[in-house]
Length: 169
Image (cartoon, rainbow, N blue to C red; front, top):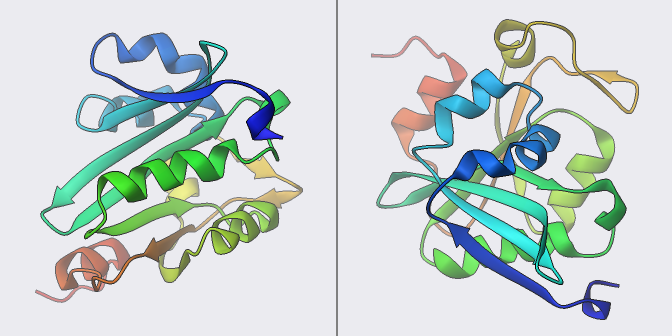
């Protein structure tokens, strides 16, 4: 269980790429990671001073934070560390809407639902349009990005429609 080890979370202000091995667990494309790593806040979960989890939070506006990457080393999964990383972000930004995008992997969607996240919208063909090859998780070929949300603030109109490609002005 997560309480069996000394677990801390720290913000990485410099040399964020040293955690690339962890970031690649949550996002298979280094070029996609490059698009947000320098713009977001990177939090590192450590067990006994060893990095084993990461979470990147990107502020879109005064009301919305997007979790761009959440990853936990396989040996530490299903022990509460991913949940604790999300709770850390939620505590840091208590009055903001927290959003995140993920694939349609059943266990991942169950995890986020158990953390209180609910469906917001989807971006059709996100994975097929933005990644060089197919991404397969739990036998599911990822195609659409599923956006989830948590918080009391509504999703900003422009963000929801821009992401969905609505064509509205």
